[in-house]
Length: 471
Image 1 (cartoon, helix red, strand yellow):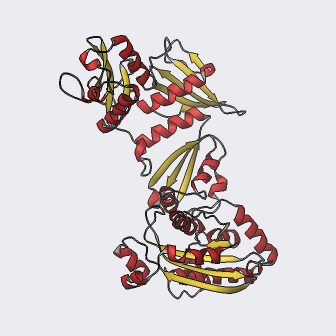
Image 2 (spheres, one colour):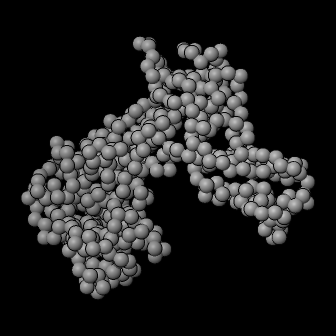
Image 3 (cartoon, one colour):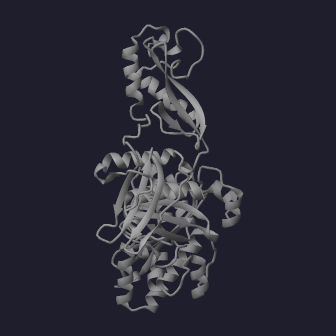
């Protein structure tokens, strides 16, 4: 049973879109070629009114005219026709994840669930022609001398896919076709820009992974206790627009293994701050942080906001919160004010004297005018900041955390003092070598990693007599 002779219908699909984001952008043109029992039974194509602005470069890229768009139906107008053509069929497309995600988003706007079994012709080409590195549609056209009536138009590209399926059917025995089809329908959807076999080569062990783009640009750093499984999840079925962009740009993947979870967490944090990858914006090092400190004035606890450089912050029980910006700090304090009925004046959110504005609304019990017991107010204050408060170093000196390499020889060791990573190294039967370097300052991200890890793994902690102790 070959592809075009399959009992299950095929729907060869191609879409042109107004951009790369399924949530923000829309389908501009769609073509569907329905194949049943080896025969094309219907071909459908149309330019759509995407109900949004189409940028000039999209019009230039596709050759679609504005007058054609204005005359076109909306996706809602053709939704029933699309459902009919895709009914009970395998969804076939080049980089099928992209086309499927956009059509799914269009149906979602209409409140209609949509999910189809997909056959990606990029993956099929990889399976049948492993000797080639590139499998994009332009390369297939050149490689097999296909004729494309209109490149970067929905029907022209869809017809090339039909030609490719026919070519495969004519060039390979039925057993090979079926084996590749079975493999592709079950395999991981790998971005077309990645080298063949790179996913399979990734380790199933703890560590970090790095996505690289063109010219070796570092795009993203992630961590996992199973690198291969985590990388695969980036290319899953329900992709966000950010993941789609990342999948489109990634050209190579590097894995660096660690002995365990702590090593992966610290290495990820360290490398993100050092390398500043494009897609790790939220985790980049902030040179300045807003610190919220606790002070007592006239018996009541106050929150005082101060700005520090990362080098100047040290672990202190007076610190009840650390934020990356003043706006983030004020937003968090305002939320705590409402949840715990804390006075905004005492939290530094409101200036002036006398009763605060919230007290007039009944959202403050009057600490600003001495009308509430200090004991009662301070108890609520403590509860509000209990989870954010920087913990006092719970040990009498430095500690050693030793992560073993599972059942293998060696591991990684971390010397920590006052929430600072003082030293770290990898060791095995041959000796030891540095794991990662640190400037011994208080790093808030590392503090959170260490505090959480130590609270869950107290048995792995060994108290040291001095900072020079090694295993």
